[in-house]
Length: 454
Image (cartoon, rainbow, N blue to C red; front, side, top):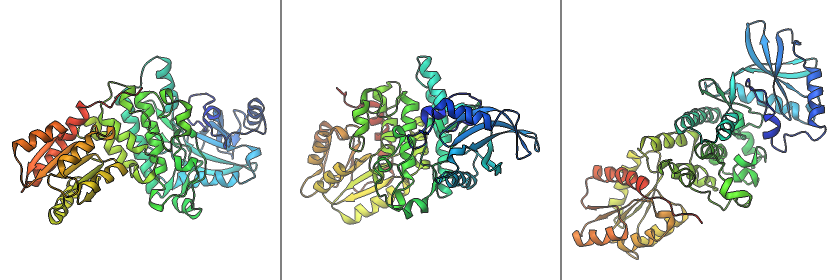
């Protein structure tokens, strides 16, 4: 990454992906060449007076400069001479275009582009502060965990910036803490769009390019897998999930207790629930973050904005369901209930089935946040289905609400002993169903801790 803040470090080399690192020359030799070609005091294109280095990366170097025409500080990125060919000039220009497509307070702004003595350069907003990576490193060195409120502020702004990038039909492709700039007020700018691509360009190749940083890279990019058109941007959502996990626990998802073996198998491995690494973290964050980290893009949180809203809801104790399973053999009632749930929970995915066997298969295929189940169903009734669900570790925090046209205290007593959370007699007041969904979600998220991991 090419650091654009006032921190003077080698973060660019430490966090650059293998594809970004130069192997043609040692770091020391590269720095000497860069320093010789862009010494402090040099005037670039008759306008920008170079002041000092801000950072270096495989593509080029970034300098603090003074715009003598507008009397302001800027960051200027100069492409390194060895990178002028082999497509790197095109990548450099693509970065400028990607930045220019987005205008948002949480995305680093580009001021201009030009050439100086045949060397392309970008002029960008200068952010006085540090990267999120440096901020995290400071907390680790102090022996503390990142502050939850500050972390959530950073995440909120990062999601907003990422959504703005997606709204501009662009995918960042390299979101990570070292590419997030923090000013002194902890305001975030998403930076380094050097790997960004237009969604249409990604789709035209039918594959993601394998680029970025492994610890924050979505499995489909690492495996260079084909991705459906409407799922392309979810690679960035996976990266946001990794960043959220690290900001709230101090670990990246497959670091610490998971170690390298799980990192290599993450396409089939679920990371530890964040609350197992940080006991003071509300359990509501577990489902939100783990959903963003789903290996299958189709099961992942659908957008950066949805992820942001779910984090806010988890913090406020107003968690909304991500997926709702409805099992009822009365087709008319089922359709009315589904429409109501879609209206009340517009961001939730609603899956409706007509019997208990289908419900169990649906839950095993895609874990749901809430199950609303009819007591009397063919093949597998509500009692049996409740027992089967509660036998699954993945359903330990999933509220199960039973609806029935017949039943009373005896049935409810047995259902409660099996682990059902609510019991409503038809004809039901639909407002009661919605209220019960929200109430049982809060109760389950706060009272049931995930099983211990050996």
